[in-house]
Length: 184
Image (tube, rainbow, N blue to C red; front, side, top):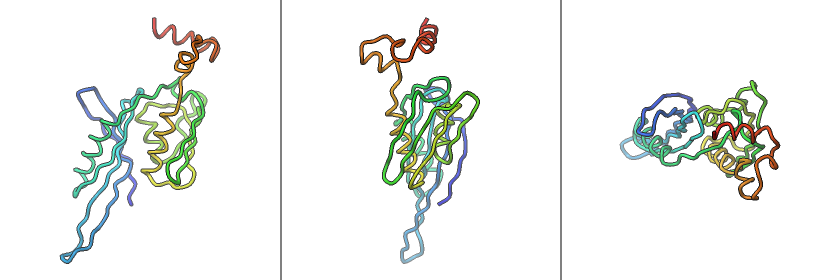
């Protein structure tokens, strides 16, 4: 199982996406005439601002598997709200035997994560984050667990709206002043 990280910029109808190839897996089926190889590729796709998606494609050729994975990633795009280049609060999620923990980091600390999690944060546009993977480090499980964690994040704006309170009651005046400046 070869793990690769490759970055390409793709032009699409919706704009420009960054693409990272997480892994390419090869399987072999032994038949009378020899072996038949098939490939499975895992790709993450993001716009570098707040949209990210992942996909998995299977085919008899590597390029076709990557193309299928990219198409699936375009369909599975989600929006993740970020605050100053990091997440709002600590996140935890698990998928199978994999458990991930994601924590916000201070300005200038960079992306402290390994493997597939780093690729997801890079295409998402996160600049400062600390993440750790526990248990199984199989690429697809780590991607699933990371996306579950990102989808479970709640922004202060959502919580304030849900409770019927102003944002200043949730986080104080720092964030609400930035939000009012951005919306004006």
